Image (cartoon, rainbow, N blue to C red; front, side, top):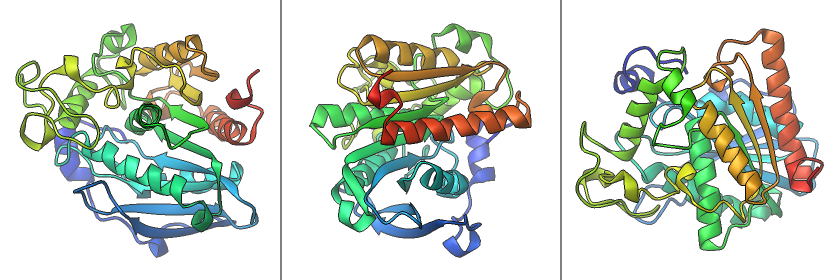
Length: 327
């Protein structure tokens, strides 16, 4: 969602109660239910919403769907229609996760919640009507950071096995050192100033606090400062900022989209290129003229085309014929 001014101020403006399922618009052909699942060790239970196409009784691929919002905004309401459309058009069970947000809950709280949801999704194929051999993650913006972080954690921990990752204008690199991040300092929707503040809120940093004190723990742990704050960016776990990973081999096939006028453009293009260089099947698409998350800069017809491509790529990655199958 577009932000005017500071992210910290937007938190107060945009936070509100979650709507009930009865208050959300129905999507014809899709059944939706909500439940609480066990959260990470020492953490609260996690709310998930499960979307399943009504006309398909067979075991379907499962996708963990992670909303964006700069690590501190957004919720599962904001992805309700998108998750339902993905379930319908990609013939998949979509599990949208409501994770804890910064600044109240800095890294790794949100990632821990998403990991708990991923383990639950992979571990309950019977309840979901899902195929345990086809589990994927999908996220946009900061949700893309969490989705990519989960693929690195799954590789490190030996599972759950993932078949696909779908990343749309993802946040990937806290170092903010790309040409696009230097160029787009005042663009609508997202810019370098907002990116800097977003990482500070997510990592629990105080102004000028990075670079001293103890390093951070990995997902499931806390760093040396209050509320899990990260004080040494050089020791930041790659699950927090996936672009920091030196080795991207062995990760699931990927679709990655970027926007031409997005400060995040180049970190997405670089990450996709590095995945390909590491032997990961990748489909990478940059859409010129678009702002972050494709909010503006494109015509309604172009936006419809982008949305259709995203759904096509998700279906191909889950059912074959896309990056997972090679070209």
